[in-house]
Image (cartoon, rainbow, N blue to C red):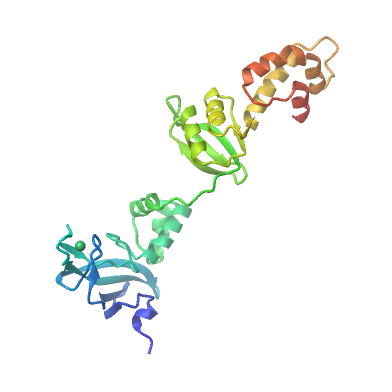
Length: 292
Ligand SMILES: [Zn+2]
């Protein structure tokens, strides 16, 4: 005969004491079948039970009802004389984490739905699925979710973003191959970008705006990387040049293409364009106009 705990997917050392079924929930009363527990501080095993208490955990729904686990947890004396901990509660690592009010397997769908729908919408959907949770509980879980390891991008986009417009700005780093944000830096200083680049070697190309801080940070942090102006600023500067070229076009040149006009006047505009740009590589005005 299959053990009832296996039917519910519970750890082998958990003993099922009782099942209660109400109109809205299935309630399992559980206890641990082990005779000893290890002190979390010194890892010394102890058999001396101090007291017991019941821990309530929310689990994944079962047959359309909420599933609650009532687990009798024992407190033990630590028998290691040299240990600073005198009493400890046994842990349930295969079931849940310390202080959690849900099983580990129950937290995963909550987190997934929270990321997909946001706190309020996820709470409403989860209540329908038999996993009642508050909006704030879901948001708390999202904040405590560890970040996934992010490989260092080969192509890095660097730009500023406003924490408070006109007052405080940070730096956003984007993987240009995936289009995903990589990191947020608390300011837009050269030293901060330099530190990040030194901690994440392997960047081959840095696309940035023409701010001097980013140029200095990129040069100091990843001197081997190719630096290029980002598309937004290239097109912005290009539009300025085209306006100047058209405004100073010689009589009879109205029908010239932007590239031809730029070539005619490139010598008079290129020094100012280059001085304003600060970019490592800039295209000639005529070439850029044709590219546009
Ligand atoms: Zn101990």
